[in-house]
Image (cartoon, rainbow, N blue to C red):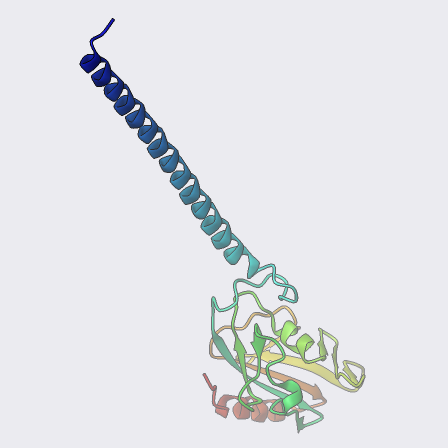
Length: 201
């Protein structure tokens, strides 16, 4: 049997050891909880970053094949003449119909493209206009299609192309669309007019 003093000392030591052990367990538990919280935050940040990076290309209404919105900002000038009449895209019905590609600031000659991979055809689609290798069709149903008397023609930087619906323009491109039976001289006049149009960045 231990003397009274030694017994009390032993009890104090046991209490101290027990307290230290409890404190150590609490500390380990807190470290584990903090580590779990930090891992959870890291996982949330990682998932959010992935979702942000991928959602740009999976946004409802995004053009097919488009890159991230804002990954490019390119400008092109356009001139559309149907039977010699210039079509005006500066009205409210044709301004900023899509964040991806549009006319803006009441300007009807400069196209702004805000994403890679967005086609000129998609621009017209947002305006309710159909363009393909044969026809230019207005929202009201008026059709201007190539036939024996009249031809729909597309020019990009003075080069005639068969279709622009899948064309992704580069910065500074100039696009001419004509419908009628123009002479080569009239086409040259239209191209000169197109070249004189300012591109509003």
